[in-house]
Each structure stands twice: as structure tokens, then as C-alpha cells.
Image (cartoon, rainbow, N blue to C red; front, side, top):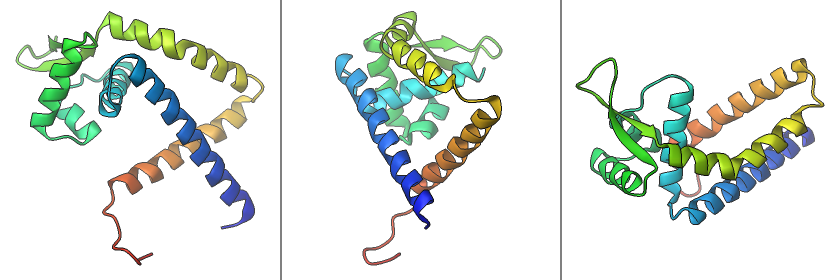
Length: 157
């Protein structure tokens, strides 16, 4: 790996560590675990994309068994972050939605970060942002694939 790529890998790792710390601070402030926060993000991302989030889809997103997803959703529902709602297109299906309380808590905590990120991006051209977007999408895919892969036996690689 050349020096530039190695440096970018280090910067990407630092970014992920810092983002993880921010997420952990939010979790601690709201009495949530890491998986709880991952679930909330998955539900929020699905809502932004206009996709209903079912318990099964949530299980796939956070890599939990169906019994564990039920416990997770029960816990998030008890603390007022998620509600089970009948799908408006198929009343037999139940989907998960963030509550207004959860949206407000996320907005209050992450709103300043969002504004600061937007301000930091303001000096980049649309073309530069397109390259950054492609880079982040590609790196996210690589990292996600690595996370899902089977670990090598000690001494391999």
C-alpha cells in the first residue's frame, strides 16, 4: 500500500473511532446499548429511504436472531423510542417506527454535529463532494463485507 492510501486508511479508522465514541455517548445518555443505537439508526435510515422496517428486516440489519429482535424491540418500545405500527399498505404486517420522542432526542443530540458537518463541507465543490461520496460508499461496502466475513484462523493472511 502506498503512503497516501495508508494515510487515508488511518484517517478513516480515526473517523470511525470518533463516530463510535459519539454514538456511545448518545447511548449512555439515554440508557441504551450499542445494539439499541444500531437498531435505531437502521429504523431511521429505512424511514428516510421510504422503506418500512419490519422486525425481520431489523434482525438482518443488526444481525440478531428473531427472539433477540423481539427482546430488542420490546426494550426500545418500553423506553419510548420505537413503536409497532400496522403497515398502511398491508394491515397484516407490523412495521417499526421511531417515536417523536426518539426523533427529538436524536435531533437535539446530533443536530449540532449535522450543522458542523454541513459547514465543514461548504468549502467543497459539488464535484469534490461526488468523489467523497463515492469514496465513502466504497469504503463502507468494504468494511461491511469485512465485518460479515468469517475470521481467518490465527496465523493466516
